[in-house]
Structures are given as C-alpha cells and as structure tokens.
Length: 279
Ligand SMILES: Nc1nc2c(ncn2[C@@H]2O[C@H](COP(=O)(O)OP(=O)(O)OP(=O)(O)O)[C@@H](O)[C@H]2O)c(=O)[nH]1
Ligand SMILES: [Mg+2]
Ligand SMILES: [Zn+2]
Image (cartoon, rainbow, N blue to C red; front, side):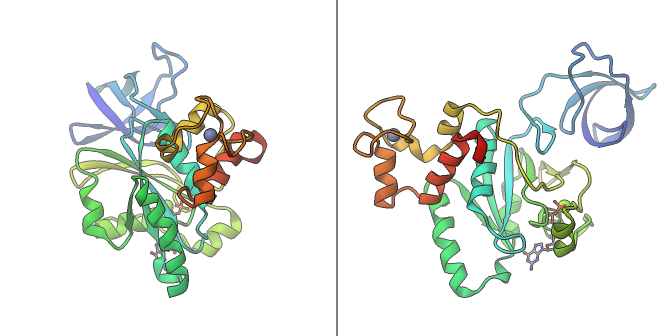
C-alpha cells in the first residue's frame, strides 16, 4: 500500500495512507540501500506488519531541513529577534533555487521595528519583489493560505523566526510548540524538534526546526551564479564571466551594482558564496 511519511520519531515512521496515519518501522533493506527515509517520502508499506517496504523515487531532496518532494519553500524571516539578515535570506533563496524549489518570503515581527526601520526594510523587501519573488507579512493570513493549494510547502528559516507561530496563526486549531526567542537564541536550542508534514488549505505544509548555520560548501560556482536570478537580465562581455575579478568595463553585473540596479548586499553575498571559506 502506498503512503507518505509525515513524521519520524527515532525509528518510528508515521505514514499517511489515504488519510489514515500508520506507525511503521523500517527494515532498512530497501532495494536502494543508500536511501534513508525522510519526511515527504512516498513509500510502499506492508499494512499488516507495519513495515516500510520501499521508498519511491524522489522529485527532490533537501538536507537542511531534511525533507523530500517539495514544491515551494516559505522562507520565514524576522525583522528583529533574530535580526534580519540579507546574508541568511540570500543563502536560503540559493538553496531553494538550486534544488528547484520555489522560494516565497514571509516577513515576521514587523511589530518590533520602528517606523524608520520599517522604511529601510521596505526598500530591501521591494528589491526582492522587483526581481520576481513573492513576499508576504505573517499577518496577511488569508493571502498566505492561498499559496498552499495543491502544493507541498516547507517552512524554513532561522530558529526563533516564527515558523511554528505562523502555523498557529494560520489555523487556530493548531497548537505547535512556540519558543521563547531570547532563550532559544541564547542557548542555541530549537523549539521545534522534528520535521512534520500536515495537510491543510488544500495542500501539504511542513514545519521544520530552525537552524543557526547552513553549509553551502558542496555547491558549484555555476549553480550559485544561476541561483541569483536577476543576473540573467544582464549580458557581460564574456559569456563565462564570474562577475568577480573581471573588470567593470567587461562586467555588466558590476555596472548594475554600481548603478544601484542590483542590490549591493545581493552582489556581496554572491561573492561571499563563491568563496568557500566565507560562506
Ligand atoms: N512580536 C512578535 N513575536 C513573534 C512573531 N512571530 C513569532 N513571534 C515570537 O517569536 C518566538 C519564536 O517563535 P517560534 O514560532 O517558536 O519560532 P520558530 O521559527 O518555530 O523556531 P524553531 O522552532 O526554534 O525553529 C515566540 O516567542 C513567538 O511568540 C511576530 O510576528 N511578532
Ligand atoms: Mg518551531
Ligand atoms: Zn559579469
């Protein structure tokens, strides 16, 4: 019988089979031995023995958060506690783009910033909109609900950004654990402990534990370049221009940064991500 893994607690796999959650074990002797089941995996199970027999081919697969078969990523980004970071946002967008997952940005904690700061953030946020990304604020509950239909959406973002709180905001029946952010950040602890997939608003939503760092070391330079989607609007003198050590006269990306068409923090992050040591 076919199902989908919606939660994993140590060696217990919660498999959704036509709406019924069956708690299964894994024998670990799948045809492809290298596969470790993750949340989002489709599988064949033996309903009587409650064993996972086989993991079905994946559409895609993310390591952090550990989840498979995702359509879009809701990047939950707080403006304060933890502080807004273009570097982290650009990293998460990069991970999504490289894995062919549509990035969607959700801003939280706007209530914690001054009017002045709001204006500054708005300029940055407007830039991300201008290059084609959807941006929502976590109070735009009705608008956000609409994006989930027929899609599997993973909520991702720094620990304390407000992922689980957003779930609780979206559906009053949910009661996900929400952490005290000062404690969480101070101790480097996550409130959410496991990845969990739930069916809501005509789609599937995945809450995940936050993180404090992301490893980009295994990405190739060409993939990093392609993940900065606004670069595609420019043509440099040399097709393989890395927009790095080339001269400004040859590089239209550098010119666009100079003119303010490309957000300078985006370009700086691009350069940082190319340099494996400062990622
Ligand atoms: N002021 C304010 N606080 C918020 C907002 N959203 C979330 N919080 C608070 O931020 C803290 C952390 O929220 P969580 O929802 O636990 O964060 P999380 O992203 O799920 O964190 P992890 O599970 O550790 O990854 C809680 O105290 C929330 O009440 C917001 O829009 N404004
Ligand atoms: Mg959480
Ligand atoms: Zn260039």
